[in-house]
Amino acid sequence: MPAKNNHRNHRNNPYTLDDFAVKFHRTMAGVLWRWRTEVIVCAAVLAGFGLLAHHVGVWRATAAIVGPCVLMAVVPWTRRWLTTRFWCLLSRHRLQRLCYEARLHTRSGRLPLILWIRPTPVGERAWLWCRAGICAEDFEAHLGEIRGACYARDARCDRNRRWSQLVTIEIIRRDPLTAGNVIPSPLARLSSDGEHARRTA
Image (cartoon, rainbow, N blue to C red; front, side):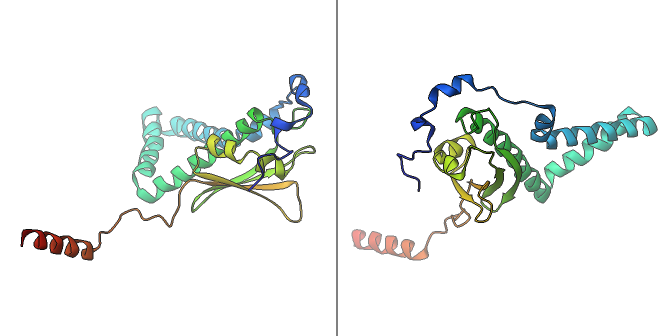
């Protein structure tokens, strides 16, 4: 657990006034990288719809695309797959927003690069590439903000032992050891029946 007086925390930043002069670098390549999943899915759907509409008509093409989508939302295992991917997308965008809001960026305005994020049995795991000026200790000082930004139960941070610029963030949403259904013990009912019998005797 990081100490509350962690010198990496932006609340103890000796360059506080520099934040007013930060100019963020936004390039088309960076925007496409951050929205790559949405761009690929939309492009594939539009291309498939255009191809089908050209051959079979608009209504049949619409049914051919909407039908499988509805089926995937109804079948349990595909619905779970879609849900986990949705949380991965949401966590990626929330982490990017957090890096901006919590000043987890370089003094030149460059945000960490989220290389990959995938689902885990307890939530999601994200791999980040830290630019010069950012390190794993910066994220450890903001675990509370990460937890809140990603709507998670908890968050953990770990750096790669070989390449310290690679940071892994574990987003924990659920505890698989927690019992979903509590099974009452029959002994409790026997003891309550015995207590009731003693009172009525």
